[in-house]
Length: 118
Image (cartoon, rainbow, N blue to C red):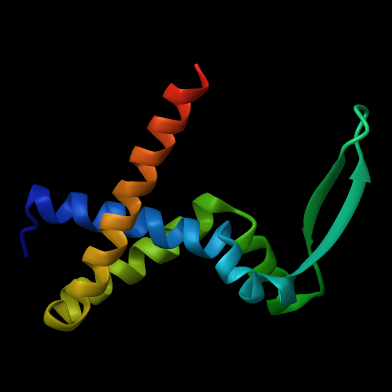
């Protein structure tokens, strides 16, 4: 099955946003908490740094390691988005478009923030 360039861009943006949602966003912190131990360390400048280490053994540690790696999680979210797109295009397209628009908005916001800081 051929994929158009537009579909590729939409899928890439959706995968990007879903990966960031799972790995970094506050709203999904409850999903990550069972797999991480939070460690606070005082930095040289006096600020407190928070670090997350995968906890447990077996599958719990594996999921913690997966969630701590943006690239690893990105592979699996990309696979899921593409699989949904091919298996259930009519049902999942609104969700994929929603993620794509949010992903593009996040990229625009980052660009604006960089420009404002200069």
